[in-house]
Amino acid sequence: AQSVTQPDIHITVSEGASLELRCNYSYGATPYLFWYVQSPGQGLQLLLKYFSGDTLVQGIKGFEAEFKRSQSSFNLRKPSVHWSDAAEYFCAVGARTNAGKSTFGDGTTLTVKP
Amino acid sequence: DGGITQSPKYLFRKEGQNVTLSCEQNLNHDAMYWYRQDPGQGLRLIYYSQIVNDFQKGDIAEGYSVSREKKESFPLTVTSAQKNPTAFYLCASSIGVLSGSTDTQYFGPGTRLTVL
Image (cartoon, rainbow over all chains, first blue to last red):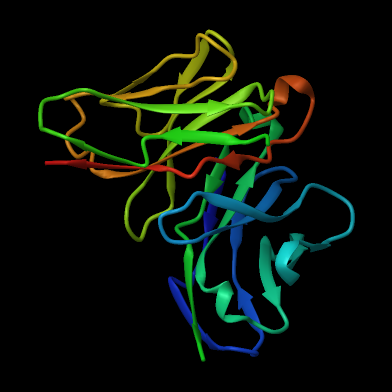
């Protein structure tokens, strides 16, 4: 069975500082990996995804993530955080062999200090 | 514009009543999903459908029912058998594995259901 762990429930960073959100997954084969962002009371928006190829993927809003197979990780990074980045972030793992279903982590809430 | 719509945005229900949440997509996606989100928790899969007239239970299907009579629509009924239905409900769709593609999911804006 596939699973996702986001170790940090809540992270606070200052505006302009760098950000790294951690994600560890468990899956027997090559996974499909996703990061989504959710603003309060809204649906989820895809930030970026990894299916194959280059292990460093670029997404929207200046985010990037790196797939590290040896560590079963897919951490999300941003060099300089903006106040508008405050939201909840979800990592997810999916696979075509699993009827296309994705399993989501419990999320990390990002607070940005002025 | 293509996308997923959910209605209503807010829904109030008395205990013992069934209620149906709407989900419509015009992305021509084969697969559709319903998730439940509780505060401080991730998304839990209720039901999913890979093609019209077919659907499967997810991890927390008890007390819920769905139908998939049209490709564009995947309504969710919260029945009186659901013991704790107050939550935020999200609908999603994806191209679908049957189309030979990957499973990026696109989400609707959600419906917040409150049981009074």
